[in-house]
Amino acid sequence: MQPIVFSALSSLATFPTAEFRIMAKKNLLNDSGFEVDVAGSGAEAVAAFSPGKYGLIYMDIGLPDINGYEVTNAIREKELSSQAAMTPIIALTAHAAIDVQAVCGKVDMQGVISKPIKRDQIEHIWQRYGKGEPIHVDGLIVIDGIATSISTSAL
Figure 1: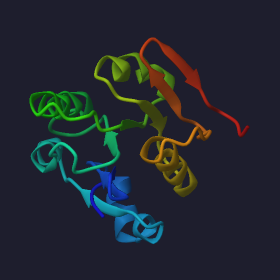
Figure 2: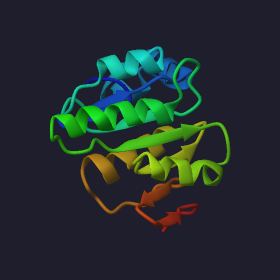
Figure 3: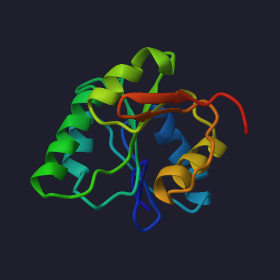
């Protein structure tokens, strides 16, 4: 599988974040059946991305070189120029998710969740965005155009 982003072939593509690099090293994601690619920087994430390669991207918005919003814009430009479908991008933040929700929506991210992210959240996010199942994800703020909802408890 590939970076912390899930690919259409059930690969998980994850983009720059120390937490995910650590998780990948511990095989938490691979043990869940995902292929994981990890980019060490925003520039690496942009270079690694090609439309259709991943089924889901986890994007740390606090990257040291290029912030996650700029990386997302570059990914969206690649998708637009190739007329590819948008890859779901979930923002990871050290701040309260509600604080970055508006900016995430403006760059066409599908959701935002505060770190640290747990294994069950990773799996539920994949079910929701990778498989299209209408599943609840604890702590995820779903961004859908103007309408948003905050998921904070199990159904």
